[in-house]
Amino acid sequence: MPQPLLSTDQALATLTNAAKVISTTESLELDEALGRVLSADIQSNINVPGFDNSAMDGYAIHLQEEQINKPGALSFTITGRIPAGMTGAELQPGCAARIFTGAPIPQGANTVIMQEECEVSEEGNSIETWRPLSLNENIRPMGNDIQSGDTILAKGITLKAQDIALAASVGISTLAVFKKIKVGIFFTGDELVKPGDELRPGQIYDSNRYALVAMLNNLGCDIINLQHIKDTLDDTISALNSLQNQCDLIITTGGVSVGEEDHVKPAVEQLGQLNLWRIKMKPGKPLAFGQIGQSAFIGLPGNPVSAMVTFLLFARPFIKKTQGCANYLNTHFKVAVDFDWHRPKPRREFVRVKLDQSTLPATVNQYPKQGSDVLSSMVWADGFAEIPEDTVLKSGELVNFYPLNTMML
Ligand code: AMP
Ligand code: MG
Image (spheres, rainbow, N blue to C red):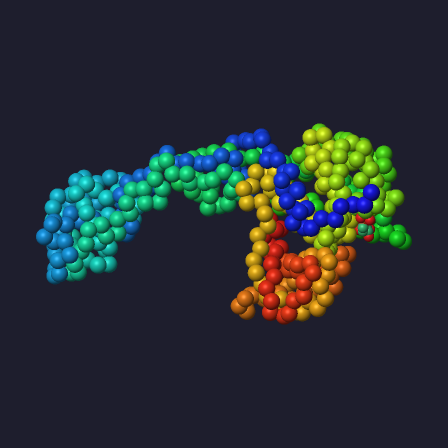
């Protein structure tokens, strides 16, 4: 039976529609929560700041009605001193309190003048000011940042330093996050040799295993790695069998073509169900997607560039959605190509390009070798330029750019 031919958009939509958000959550201390996905909205129970406070080191003043915005010199008696963390007594009309950044504005005070804008008398018991003073200068009002009841963090965000800090600022000490998803992996191909071992004729070093482990670590997955297995149907079946009940997802690379050495496809079909797609894209093409027991299955192509590109474009959004991320799609932006694309191609191409941000719009130029086996292109590139199918382009025309630095974390 011929394999269905899918566009990249159809493949991505099918995968992400099938992805089910993991249902288990755990509660973590703030220091443990970096990079994890929040599983519930967070509300604040307090105002931040919790009280009107001074934005400056200076003097809190009780301006009287007739002193507001009045030109000329004014004098105030110093009757208090309020460091941050303390509270001051009520301030009488015409009086001032020495105050420090973050200290609460005392009752009666209605403005703060910075210390650089006033002169303290020789005795140190009064200050003089010269410019007109308005109400509420240098006062940070209660609830200026956050009001009690505000939703401060939304379910589905991946927690960053600033999110954790905001939770801390409202007094929250633990955060509910989705449990890490478990991803089982193994690798097929009798030609593959572990780095560090010696190559015999016809053999190559296994690089996909390391690419996959690193990319899954970037996504914060728990990895169950069965390593390299023998390229037989029996070994493939037992590998899948041992993973299916303990994993949310199984990923393999290679062995999903239709050659007789490709055992992953029949093994998955025997244990569960499998769709094998030919995707109208380059690099890539064969991509397998299925289900074995509790576990989803994604079979990536064997060629190293194809394996990485299809992982980033398809498996990554699938994993992020499963992990509970609200924004699981890859981000991209428009750039100008610095090359002509002379002939329309039937497959969408994800060209490895370098980004030049010194121009407006930013421009991209392509690595000279775009073969799916040329792993150096991934190291050289800043990202992928998406060249639509059946299209010709002139230098300067705009295409989508997928930055590697955002997909590799
Ligand atoms: P396959 O999809 O198994 O036919 O593999 C396609 C190509 O990718 C072949 O040239 C394989 O040798 C190569 N390949 C498969 N798996 C790996 C791997 N783990 N690391 C590096 N190259 C691989
Ligand atoms: Mg193979």
